[in-house]
Amino acid sequence: MDNVARLDRPRPLRDQVHERLRTAILSGSLAPGTPIIEAEIATSLGASRTPVREALRRLESEGLLEPRGLRGSVVREIKPDEVQCIYEIREALESLAARRAARKMDAVEGARFEALLVRMEASIDDVSEFERLGAEFTDRILALAEGVRLQRMLSDLRADIVAWRMLSLSRPERRPEIVRENRAILEAMRAGDESAVVAATTRHIANARDSVLIRLADQATSERGTAESA
Image 1: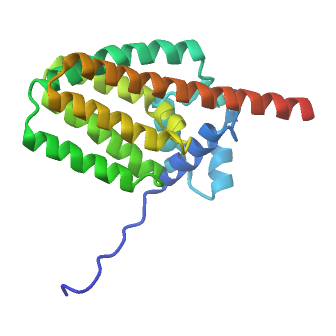
Image 2 (image 1 turned 90 degrees about the vertical axis):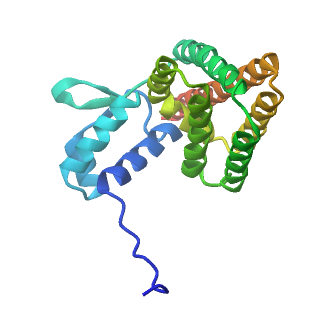
């Protein structure tokens, strides 16, 4: 049986529904304020209400939907001021984590980071896999930095901005930029240059923030054009 390929397990319906809705929201197909009714989504996708309900709860936890009680949910508007504030917090925490990680960096850890960057480069065209590897890069920095409180704070923050990360990654030109930025962070950590680590991390997060704001502006322009032509 060694030569028999393993069966591919079908993805849970809740994951498929979640991905379909998240893509529609991040692409602007579902504009801010659009009502999201569980029963209507279930009917349109040909799914039962249970996986739809689970997917909607996940989207609410990611900050993409805003619950409206018995009336269901609406697509939540992401405000630029909110993005700016959250990314300033992220800059402070991730810069601290990278500085601490630089103090523990050695040849073995450097090789592990390098291998991860190679995998990221190979996944440029796969947004979901690229996002997963990007999160793994940050997780590795956190593990090296140690500090339970710091890890908890950054984990909570990342849960709040996961949808924004996907919004940023929806711009194809952003993904190779991230690889280059992460490589700059790695090189600074390898050199043990904490000032360079902070500079590289700050630059990476500023670019991530700007990418999100660009996509939000694009969506707003598209929505205005649709409204004017209606």
